Amino acid sequence: MKKSALFTRLMTTALFTSLVMIACKKEQSDTFSAAEEEQAVNYSTQTETENEVVFNDIFDNVIGVNTEVGIGGTGIFGRIAANGREMNPDSLPSCTQISITLLNAPARFPMKIAIDFGAGCIGRDGHKRSGKIITEYAGKLTEPGNSATTRFENFKFDSISVQGTHKITNTTTAGSNQRQFTIDITDAKLSKPNGNYSLWTSHRVITQIEGNGTPFLPQDDIFKVTGSSHGKVKHGDLMYAWRSEITEPLIKRFICRWISKGIVKVRRENANSKWEATLNYGQGDCDFLATLTINGTSRPIQLPH
Picture 1 (cartoon, helix red, strand yellow):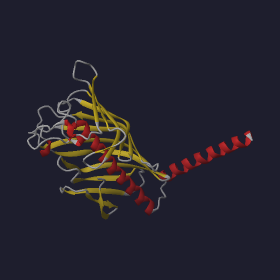
Picture 2 (cartoon, one colour):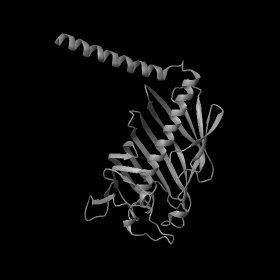
Picture 3 (spheres, rainbow, N blue to C red):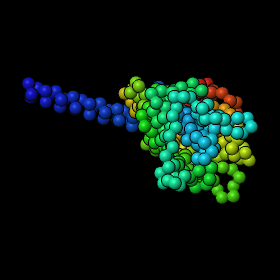
């Protein structure tokens, strides 16, 4: 019986290893059919936009806690009144708890802030968040040179589990009247309940092009986003690798939930693949519509919202 059980385990291990090798070989194969190539680019583009939505939300929340650490009033902290004054923090859902720790007391910085959504908290935007976002601020993010590094503890955005490191650095040039942030996302993993997941590394530069004259009134803020990313997405039995580049700056207005303008190009990591996609966010309208073009064929799509 022991010998039979050992043989079964060895055969199972060998079979699993073979399947993994076949899947990896399939991803690097030059013999993808046209349908498989299109599917790979399509899934990669969908994953790119999904990751963008999740980590944009992280950025808004990290920088929006209050005016001591950031801009204040963005993301779930959207409590800025029309006159630019902050409303009472009880406008946050009661299911969200904020804790602040001074890491070198009595100095205000570095400061750690944990946003705890508990077992599940639905925001005014309709998204359910759970777990914790924990950020260490080296200094006030509105001042050049300061940074904030975020990690996650059992955090979920809707049903998507989020892992990785998110770092914001104020890279505004001395004397410039345009505020700028650099966002680096490393070792990110977004996992879904069905077992599919994506791995993502991203570098973005966000430059404020309007609203710099009113630093604590974000309603008139408009940002342009440049940069690139790369990642892998597991969908079913296959793993697809891709790279993306923002070829026309993305335009994001504070008063709009979605990117309203700009183009992202996505292509498979395989150097021999000629398949690529472009995602066009439109001409400035505030909506969740975009145009996806794969090898010259275009179709309208809805962005995650």
